[in-house]
Length: 258
Image (cartoon, rainbow, N blue to C red; front, side, top):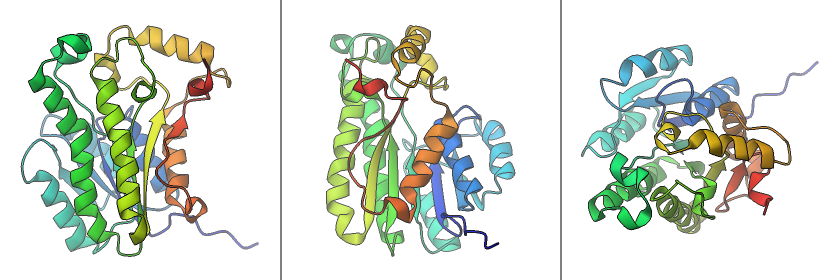
């Protein structure tokens, strides 16, 4: 019996944002690897490296480099290595978000200009910078994905400054989809349901948000990181070749509920 070739076999995928095995970015990398893509994985800094390096080794990542998007030159160094080692890129995942704790946990009215600027730079503009570096390497087209959340579209109590920031990220994805479409590059804002990640732990009353999502989801259960990973893997395959720009929800249907 003929065995079908895995749909991502031989594709080159860069995943930015893995902190540990609970990260959405880890789910993406694991799904890509299962479908036989070659991986490049980054870690934030030396403190994060011991948590991410075993993951990179287990997933047999060809490239493993530091990448703090707020540090000048680190992003460029990652893409230089991708170009040097692979000469091309097919898939990019941006799963990076951050805001100062005092600005994240206070309401939007209380958010400082400096905190808002930092949140926008790390959580949104860094994706634009990545896209600028990735596009020349996607010589035969490719797929870019950035992680959003339902708080970008509707008010989610305690999501605070990250709501406007994620809204900006989703809008940026739409405009990049328009600008890069002629090159065969598709851009997707992906909106997972609430997940127990390290980033989410900074939100006030996050457990209440999880419980509410499970109760409201038409499918009656929460999503996990592999649900998100395989949805992203699908978007990177030729099966999704005519999908671009629109927010893709992976939340068990929570976003359709009033």
